[in-house]
Image (cartoon, rainbow, N blue to C red):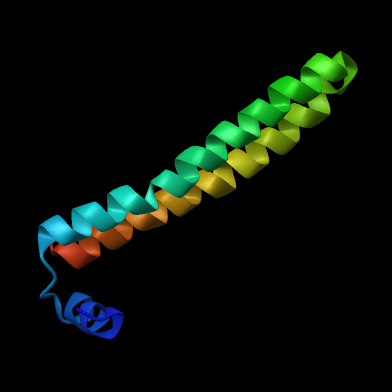
Length: 85
């Protein structure tokens, strides 16, 4: 099936809910990896320069929120595509 056909089916509400769940699961991989990289960088930065912990934490929480918003948008799109909303 082409991407255009899938997009048209999702728009008309004819998308299989299982396919929508698989799509959300794959879409959640990106934010999961992003969160891991953010906190790994904070741990490394704090280990190298402990006095910079406050500044690193502010940056980390800001980017964490932005990455998690992507996961929430994916969840909303899953409910829209599956028709469960």
